[in-house]
Length: 232
Image 1 (cartoon, rainbow, N blue to C red):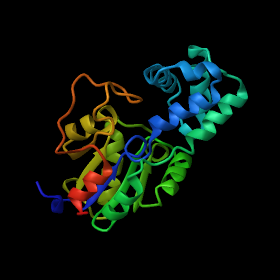
Image 2: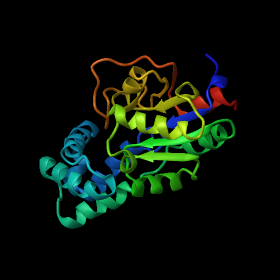
Image 3: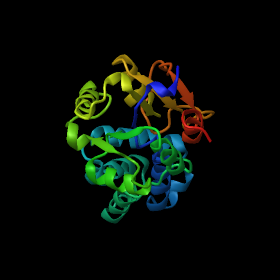
């Protein structure tokens, strides 16, 4: 399959381009007090996912409460100051080391579209950190639903059709099997899995899936993807 058949790359942002796992772990250990340093990554991720499930609304607003739930579960500092600090840190999560350069190269050949469960405030912060590479953006504020809800993909499909692009023109690029790869393949999209946790056990900060969906393209990094799609 040739990359030349695609005109649009749609990207998951948080987890694929933005290193939210490092950001979340560092945030908890920075504000959680002395006990936080003794906790393993999986302990923090498990509590984080439960907190996010309990507060699925706009990430620029509810991470205060996500952290408070996590902190109470793990017996960490949970006062307002700690919760505020974690909320602010979420908006400062940084790109993976290869994201900015890879997107810059991919932009020379493809239309780049962000498809993120983050809200508009958070997406604006992440897009800025990434060098504002996107031609278009779709976020949870626009769709009213979050991936893996098929309505999210339907919203973007209609939006891109207004610019003259068909579903067959789109390659969906993402890290999360749960939020993106499985549902996109089910809906008939070609998919590229950026397996950021390659070589690591478990699913980290994203929900587990019972069975991995085989992607059309598979890379461990955005750099490797850009090398293949555009050239080094």
